Image (cartoon, rainbow, N blue to C red):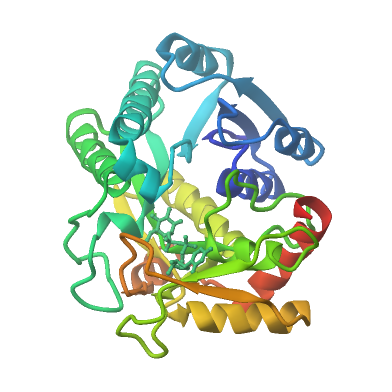
Length: 330
Ligand code: UFG
């Protein structure tokens, strides 16, 4: 069976992708420096299939090369990156060095070892402030923060590497990823947690901080920001399909991963109250810097070309996230 290198496989989305790949009988090699991923997650993943783990950093090119020499890697799924928008504004150097230089080292090792297929974790943040909604892949890419810039630079590098070296990439531009494994094996585990759904859910536990709602005066249906919440299990299935697409000789391409539906912060909050069957306390705060009012994906292209179909409702994602929080985050 084919072996896939998953960088960032100990992290939130990466770990769910590893499970999806194991379910398709791939062998998985994980590269992770555990800076935001967790060794406990790797131990869990090892129970479900053929998983080899390298605790190393993409900024160590010799170590990355060894992984390709020691394993018969067929393709790469590349998640490893820093991903906090706010932090990237305060410390852009951390983002440019880690995300861009790390990826350059990865691509170099791929080319040295003649591996020419990569699925890359890109982001809706490459589009910047939306000019129209829903956002399709033809929307201009003008990121408004260093995090989005790093992902856009990498997309452009991948285009040049295809022209020059025949490296085929599929770039998946995520909207707001939500939920957890439906068997509660892995889930969202960030320290500190900045994302909406886990923060609402954590506030329901004893000792949890009161949920802070950032901004209720946006020009949206109820004044709170609208986002397109895509379930993490649906999202990782698109990565499996993208690998199949590349294996079938597919050309370099890029796709939005979202649901075509926007939900406001207040709607998500109400859905969390319904799923948890609790009345949740809330502190209404000022706007959080850098939040656009609305981000919603047009996902037609991924449906047509990858034959991808997101299935889970927002409530199902919240339910899985809640089950995970009860076991692991409480
Ligand atoms: N929010 C709150 N309270 C919280 C956390 C979030 O009110 O405790 C609000 C935010 O202000 C925002 C919405 O909930 O309006 C969603 O915020 P998230 O932090 O969950 O997600 P973002 O939309 O900011 O960011 C996500 C990813 C980024 C990615 C971006 C792309 O986390 O990595 O989408 O648009 F860059």
